[in-house]
Structure formats: structure tokens, C-alpha cells
Length: 294
Ligand code: OGA
Ligand code: MN
Image 1: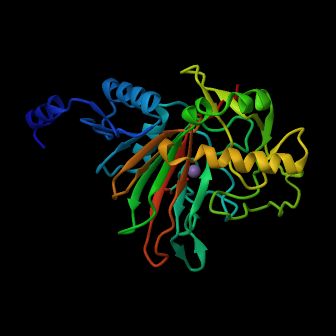
Image 2: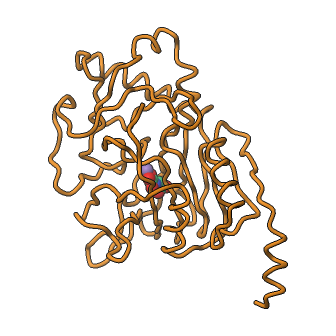
């Protein structure tokens, strides 16, 4: 491309945030993910704070470009333990591959082709990752959509009685299984949730940048509200999960290759539909170093 054309193209780009009109989600247009200037970075950060999850469509980026994009949100966090016991990409250990592709019987990524249940990323760590960025390299023709539910809204609409009852209580966030139900390498099956390995976090957390409270559940499997009789914890967690994922809190993304999603795990839960196992889905993800929950 000629220099004059490059300049012309740059000046044409006017960043724009287009809200989904749902409880969360926005598309950002008028930016170039391969040329991260201050206006782009500022727009993306503002869009994520205001809309919780943001999509940028149709811009294929390389692994170093994905890493550069991640670093505009903070330091990168190495991903959780994979199902093969080591990073999927030797050259880029900070990248987590989400894929159903197998080569010679070895998975090339986590989560397979089944449903990934509602969850928030890496909450089994004391400092869970804040932002996650997922970039689609290959997607199946149908299925594999990703859904997000606004947990500020979930908190705001809880009954006063539940808010009071649960205020200050902590939940154990089990590390044993990933959201696809796959056992992480090196972990043993859990029979009693009270003994699940993983961090404890307050069930209501305050987002440090917005000051708003959000319901923070992590994932359902092996969760336990510390201090309650197990049966009561189970009953309350079932009730809270049904509430957290109510349709009016949800927006979903239908993927095309080259799309990038950026979301804030401090105030969202997400899940993924299953898809035809004979189709390929290949996504690369980075996640931003977390902070202690408050
Ligand atoms: C993730 C995740 C869902 C998807 O990357 O954290 O949950 O759509 N992925 O692949
Ligand atoms: Mn996830």
C-alpha cells in the first residue's frame, strides 16, 4: 500500500461503540486491531467498562497481535492447567487454545465440541483474571455461539432478603474441572464440594473501576457457600444460578472467523453452545492478570 493511501485509510477510521441494545454487549467499529493507537485503546477500554463485553468483527490477527492487544489491558496471566498438562502453543505459553481439533489423538485445545456451562474464567485462583480476549481463527457453520449474562443486574435484582443473608459470605471455586466438564491434568475427582481445591471469594464482589457490586458465582460444579450446611448451600446455589442466567441478563455472539471478543470476568458469566463435532472450531485466548476480589 502506498503511504498516501495508508494515511487516507487511517484518517477514515473513526472509532464507534454500537450497543447491542441488550443487557450487555457492544460492537466496536472504526478501529484496526493490528494498529493499536491511543484512540483505539481508549475506545476499547471504555466500551468494555460500559458494555461488559465487546466484539470486533472480521479482523484476523496473529498471535503476537493478540498478545499486544491483551497487554493494552494489563499484564498477561498464564492460562489455567490445560487437559494435556502443558501449554498448547510452545512459542506462546500465555495463549490458551480453545478447540475441538485433535491431531494424532491429542487435543489441540480445551473444551472439545460439547456445551461449556455457565462460568467465569479462572475464579479458582485467588486473583482471577479480569479481562479475557478470545479470537476466532476457525468456526463451525452453526453452533458454538457464546452467551454472556450481566452480573451487576443479577446482583441488583436479588431480593433484599437474599442480599442480606449472603452479604460477606464466601464461595469455594473448584479448580478440578474446566467449563467443558474436562478434568484438568493432575486433579482428582471431587466427591464433597466442601473439600474442593480452589480459591474462596465473596459471593458479591465490587468492581474496582465502576464501584458496582456483582454476583460472583464462578461455576456451579463443586461450589460451596462456606459456613452453611451442605444441603442449604446446594439449594441456595441452584436458586442463585437460575437467577444469574435469566434471559433478560443475556446477550450472545454468533461467531465468524476473524472476530474478537473482549469481556470482563468481574461482572459477567458466560457459556458456549455445543456444535457438530465433525466441524473445526479454533480460538486463541489471552487473559489479563487478575486482582484480589473485594
Ligand atoms: C473461554 C470460553 C467459550 C467459547 O474462552 O473462556 O469460555 O466460546 N470460551 O469458546
Ligand atoms: Mn470461559
